[in-house]
Image 1 (cartoon, rainbow, N blue to C red):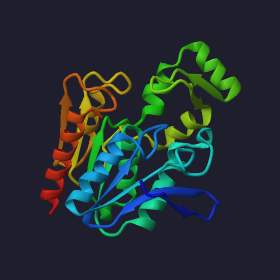
Image 2: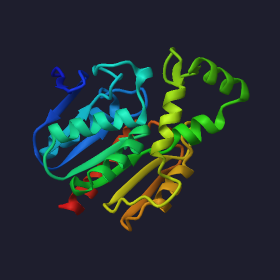
Image 3: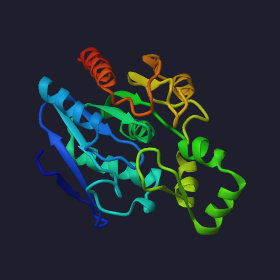
Image 4: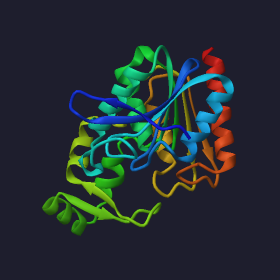
Length: 251
């Protein structure tokens, strides 16, 4: 695997990324909370795009993977700003954004900020508003006390031994970016994939999102037995089929 390139920013932070040259519309992958750009979906999409001669970009959020910063300092706003920075610097023309979990939220925020360059969206277990609906709303009284007192709460991480650190700042700042509370003025084609056995983000979230999107060209595929990651071989093949059909329809 080739070494990642680095995008320096004016604030001194750096974003690590891999870019594949090719035809448009390009594809940009946005990973999940705590994940990096070396995951199964990111690499499968790179192989897919390489085979098609399609431009492709994957990168690490600040505090993730090879990018600079501390994970605990990140917020939805700062991660979206970094995503827009690498999007602006490393892509040209129309792009299809593919967002996994938290990346599905950031994907939507980017589509609103760069509507003229967003050709389509593919959400994989998209988790808009998760700081409010899946963290803040589900904290036990004792956990709320710890979070308010210490500014950070450690919770079990089902995908690794080390606990996930949730900060008060993440929750409070996330409230400024909520989308599911009203119509979402995204008007490009949208395809949503969600596993019905997702233990992290309820599959009903996909239907809520489908309802709130203003575009009429939006569909949701519910995968019976599918988990949150949707990274099994069959899941990756399904993702490739959905993305290929979307790219063909966009032309």
